[in-house]
Length: 164
Image 1 (spheres, rainbow, N blue to C red):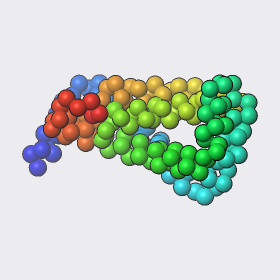
Image 2 (cartoon, one colour):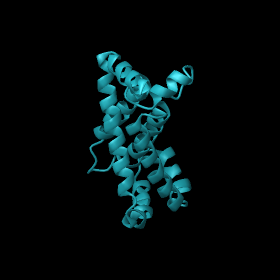
Image 3 (spheres, rainbow, N blue to C red):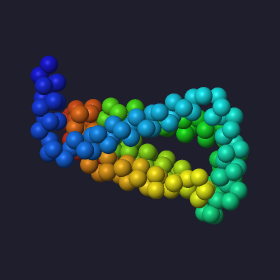
Image 4 (cartoon, helix red, strand yellow):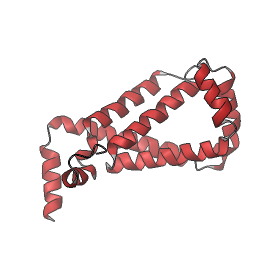
């Protein structure tokens, strides 16, 4: 019970600026978890190959077009499951504040992947990708899992480890 009291006291006593990154961390976690859970629906896998081909067709980034055509499309099922599992794991990690630096980094990579895949399309508001990407960096750089997260306990036990 004492460790729970210390956790709440020390988390609350962090600079008041810690509350913003914590709220951002949890919000991003819910976003990633919800996006991953949506992909559990069978229709996600049904339309994934055609969506990847559509994104590759007129993609303005030659290196990304190469990635889509030579990696993602030939292995679209593995790629789809990887994205779905990655989104769910990043979401849970951010919600509970465990391995926050690592999960924020992977969240940043995933959102930039979505940016390069689809930001050029007419129906996309590309600033959405940048807002989420910068938010992921804020969570990572502020180590937002150390306040009101499991990273608090990990940082106490292993203070020099960089993943929390």
